[in-house]
Image (cartoon, rainbow, N blue to C red; front, top):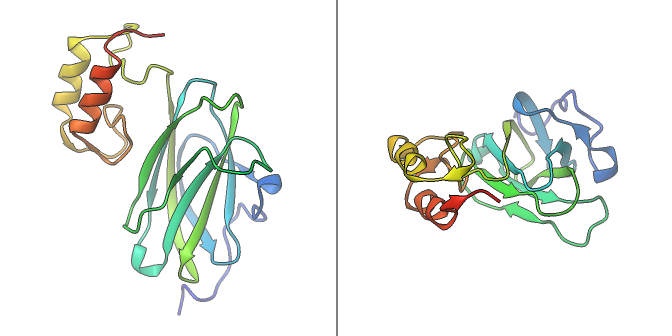
Length: 179
């Protein structure tokens, strides 16, 4: 009953790309998305940097999905996360040319759902975990130290909520000096 009725969150109106609310990096709780009222957020992400998004919600109350847009009015998103699980997370390296990305949060099923978002922006060379300007053995060691469930960890390079083989593969592909 609670989810079928009730007020929206304090960021309303943010139902379109043109009315997107500015959302800072960090965690924002107490957000509400409704079936016919998607939420749009503007996030500053420098060109070449990586936007990391982690959401917390109960899928049983409605399937929340995400799209990232480079500009209002674009024909297609630059990234999306369309899972059907609790607590989705994903990342996108900003190669769009825009320094403000639009994150669309919408319900693909259900009537209303509460959620929180944790946003972070990491350097263009996110694989350089120790910040020395190149991807080396010490970065591999940092990935291995965080191996396993680790939502929001810098070593979670693919943004899936855990540090695993995919993250190690991304690190190996970037081995050497950062661009």
